[in-house]
Image (cartoon, rainbow, N blue to C red; front, side, top):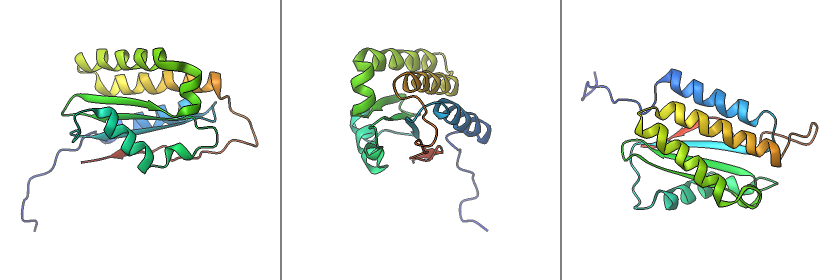
Amino acid sequence: MRLFPFNKKELLQEAEKNRLVQAIRSAERLTSGEIRLFVESRCAYVDPMDRAQEIFLSLGMEKTRQRNGVLLYIALKDHQFAILGDQGIHEKVGNTFWQKEALLLKQHFTQSRVVEGMETCIKEIGESLQLHFPYSSGEDENELPDDIILGK
């Protein structure tokens, strides 16, 4: 018997997790780029980009061969997020691309379509990675896991 019998509510339902993992796999299918999704309830930092940078480094995302990893960071209860692209992809797409993706996420979030917003953002990031870092058979490997990282 547990001391506290109430169930802790999951940040994402199993079906939502599966849907987002599938979006990551589809987005990475035709690119050497890597996309990671980190979801937690609250951002302990004032600026979610600071938290995203900490996570990016802790996950070793800067160690991809072509420096083409992208982290999508979401703090669900705080309604904060950050999109952080490594040096290789940032040099190709520039600030305008990241701002467009941030606006897309914000629009979905304000309409309470959080999972759909993450899914759409992942798809568009994948398209950009495919354009600038196309898949090359024999050379490409999945350098980072496709799973969703769930924080506190």
